[in-house]
Amino acid sequence: MLNKRKKSKVANKVNQLLEIPQEVSTNLPRLTIIGFEKMLIENYKAILEYQDFYIRISTYMGILNINGYELNLKEMTTDDLLITGKIEGVDFETITDE
Image (cartoon, rainbow, N blue to C red; front, side, top):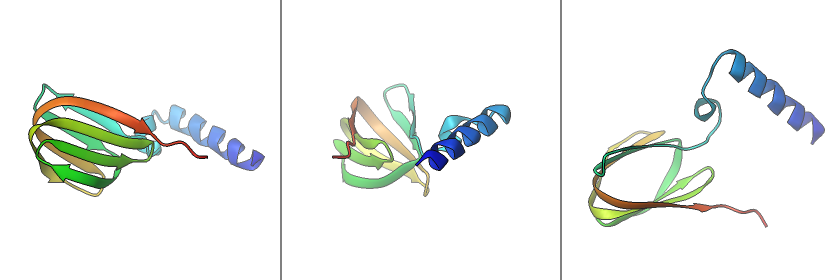
């Protein structure tokens, strides 16, 4: 366990020296919302549910819920997802290990 922490600290220092953004070096999700009609999600795991008024996305930190109207998955890659439509709300469910 101690060795794992030490590796993590070294990796963080290297990332800081090289000025690598945290979301690139880890699996942290990055959300970019453009107005009320576009949302780019980077570092997602899976699409759990997709309807034109509700989309659920699994990320490495939890589940992202997007509510709105006429929601579409416009572009998808293995790492990025572009959602278009009338976005009314976004909420995040954290994952807890028990």
